[in-house]
Image 1: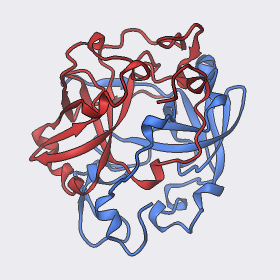
Image 2: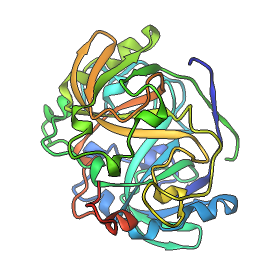
Image 3: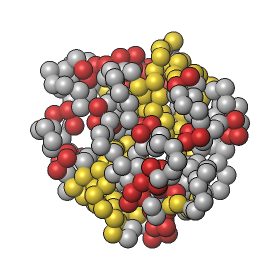
Length: 155
Length: 155
């Protein structure tokens, strides 16, 4: 139960955000900023066949390795906040396991390359998994804790 | 970019589904079946502090290890389907990286144990990460490809 798990990249992100510092914290980005952030998810040739049928989905969930995140933390002060929050109640990259998750809009597929928007991931990031976004991932009447208490609406 | 990534469990799932065979495929479960599936996400003591502030969120994203999934595949025939689909267009456990993802309703927290509903995970599953579900994870006007073409509405 406590044994380590080994994963290997199945692809790589191509993004206009070349460095972590190029990426505004989602909560501080201008409205619709990420909607216009277009880029590509390239899947390595040996996994290309696994993309079949994905074109029918409007959105995908991309799991990736926060490969630039540095050391993990249990608590961190989110951008614009004054006090630390438990890391599992944030989307901070400084997690015990450096796994990132983004829901992206799928604009098209060209072979083993997916064109996406909503891309909030740094260029060169290793992709670990791609899943179709389904209605079970879409929750209504959500509460978003400390995110709601900020001056701006929860994002 | 292609180097392996090592993860370690941060917790474990306590579920009434003791074996993979106990878990109906979500598309074939009776309506509201999983809404009534209640269980617990136990976080190991050394990560307990990372849960702080999570109580304010109505839903959490749990990333877990499909530890009972067997060998990975690039294509698989989903339950009730007649032809194989690319694994990245399914939620099958037989993935190149055996990462599972569920969005669960957070009913409460007792120390390092989260009570959840919507639990579609096998008992004893290693938990890799917990993230707050935010409005950026909630997409509207979604299309769900081959899932929509079945006799039952997409789930």
